[in-house]
Image (cartoon, rainbow over all chains, first blue to last red):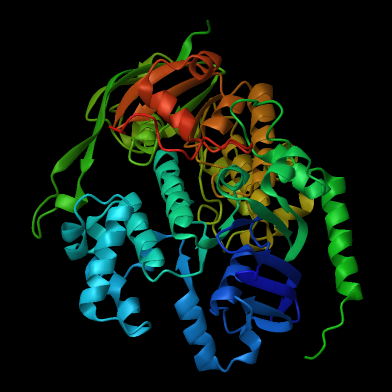
Length: 292
Length: 276
């Protein structure tokens, strides 16, 4: 089966030459959830942005290839690329408040994309959003469509954005820390909802998070990132059963667990960090950018 | 049982509700804390947990008297400090210290780490032997002495939070309020900061109120826990009792909602009964 998303040795640099992505390779199969986990600065959001074609201008891709359902993004001109990305992918963002336009009602801002990018009629788009709002268990879709973002709670806003992401039936959704800003009880509801819609619609998901707990619950595959490099890649159950890389083991041990307080929250060992620094430096020495 | 450092009875706090403020005139008051009773034993670390809007930060701010309660008493070492004036509070300030959530915004970008740690010492009449005291504070939190001349932007997140702790502890306070001090940090850094705080609290015999939304962190660090919701206390008990045998449904729901880093295929399944 053709992967939904394939990234082949993607490297990106900042203007000062610093590498932010180091030959990242990963695939997301159709209907699969792949978690991308790492600490701040690991480059997990950067990968999500690269896939969606919204990297900051200062970040330059110097190596590698990205394919969405077998079509290489690099071979398309800018317009064709935008159309492809717009039709096949969607984003569930971290902060539902900043992602919504505060001065527009929910209705028009969620149907916009369907009308403008996919060329649907206004009526069809309205009908579709209404249906999705029901799927995300919003009880009064009519009322919510007329609301402004500030009139909704954080959990409701995130539901609206999930509905909007699934509305156009994308093949792939990038979810960038979609529950980080939420309380735990709301987080659980939202994760449950994302998993349910993902399964029902058969959508592939690239799930960016810093939380190994969330990784364990939502994903089937996982890539662990450090300093823009994939240090370990595994099926999620295998990663927790027998983590291979010392950094993965350290991360799992550092994650707090109320069920086992004294075996968790272990500070990351200096040797592990030194080993990682060596590994990254080694990869950079071996790396010759093909151009630039 | 040690005698309590804090003894709080019937604590109510009302703050202006800006969402209901008329265009002209005062905002109506909203009751944030609705009559709380609890003790903080001397030398104990107490976890205060709750979701956003539960009033946990407001409670912390009332304890260190950054805000004045609208009713009830806050007795600190047997004396009600609930309604003391700013001038009357001054001598107490060095005993009531705070570590903040975001070390980036709570450290002055234009001051060196030395002057950041020295400021409260000067304020509280400990301006003599300043170099020595700052050096001691840095050493206590495991930062090299060379950091005294640096600025906040030259430090990592974990190092900045160490400075925040050094500043709070430089005065050898009796009470420290730690409000979500690790929620902005990566897990690897979080573990370092928590083990540091755990060690220092024990060494210095500190009484700590540790506010957090993370029950896993609280279990590790705290001897007793107060669970808050909508301005009231849902459940307060010794840590092990609370985790092993939570009495309230809300506490059980909170625990069940935490995604532990282990595989559990049922976790995302909808609850058996329809949710309330």
